[in-house]
Length: 417
Image 1 (cartoon, rainbow, N blue to C red):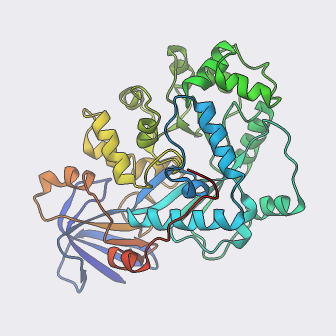
Image 2: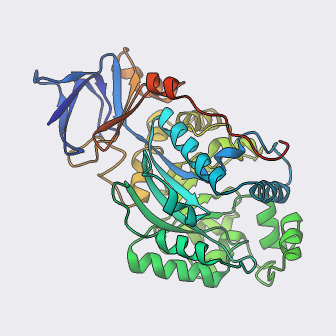
Image 3: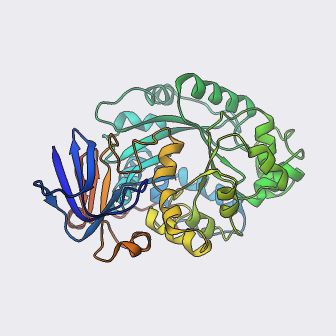
C-alpha cells in the first residue's frame, strides 16, 4: 500500500478535500479522503487530480507541427496532409508517435484516444507510456491496395500486448471518405466485440455543402478521386450518416461543428458522446461551437486536441482554456469534467478513469496550488507549463525535471514547411 498526501485533493466526481490523501495498491485506488496521520509521501503544496484524458488525437501527425498554415479551404488542408504523408516513412511515424506521447505526459494527459492510420506500425512499437485506446482508422473513398505487411499489421493491431494499458477500437474516418457499407461493418464489429466506435462528423462547412447541396470544393475534390457522389445533395452530413443506420448507440462523434435544426431531433436519445477540439476549431477560424446547447440537451461532451497538423500543442489544459475563452458562461468544473469524467464515460470506463474514487485506476497528476478551496477550479483550469508529477497505473512516470533532462528531439519533415 502506498499513500500520497497533498495540500488539496480534487476527485472530480465529488467535492475537494483539504489535506487529502490517496491510498494505492497494485495500481488501483483503495481509499481516499482527508489525511488521517498515517505514513505518506507528501507531495506538498499541490492539488492532486485525476490524469487528464485526451478524447481525440492523431499521434501519427505529431511531426506536422507548424507544417500547414491555416487555410480557408478544408479540402486544400486535406491535400496538404496527403502531400506530407507521402514524404514520411515508418521510422518517421514511429518517432512522431513517441514525441506525441512525451508531449501528452508533459501536460498531464494519462489517457488518450488515438486514431491510428498505420496499424502495421504496431508490431514495432514499444509499450506506450500512457493509457491508450487505439482507434483503427477505416476508409474506402477509393480502393486501396494492401501489401501482405499491411494486412498482417492490421490483424496484429487487435492482438493483446503484454504491458500495454488501454484498448482497441474502430474509427470509420468520416462520411465523405467511408461508405455506408464500411460504417455498418464497423458497427457490427463494435457491437459484437464490445469496442468503442469514433468518427469525424460535420467537421467543416465544405463537408456540409457537399452533403446538403452536392457542391463545393470538397465535393469537387472527392469526385476527382472517383468517389461515388450519389449520397450527396440529400441532407446534412448528420442526416446522411444516421439515415444509413451506420452508428451504434454510444458512438463518439468528433467535431460536430455544422448542424442544422433537424439534426438535433435525429441526435436525441442516441446516447452519443460529442468530442470538441477547441484549439483546432480556433485554428480553422470556425464560428461559434454549440457547446452550451449540447450541454443543455444532455450530451456527454468531451475535449480533445486533434493532431499537430491543426494545433500548436497536445495540451489538454490549453484546450480547457480555449473553451473557457470562447464559452465564458460554462463553469470551470464543467470544463474539467470534459477532460476527465466525460471521456472516461464515453469509453466505457466510468468509475475507473477520470476520477479519484475507490477501485479507480491510480492515474493522477499534481498541479501546484497553495490557495483556498474556493479558488481551486479556476487555479486548475489556468495551469500553464509542464505538469511536475504524473502517475499512470500507480507508477510515477513523469516529472518536469526528468522531462527537461530527456528533452524532445525536434522533428523535421522532408519537405519545405
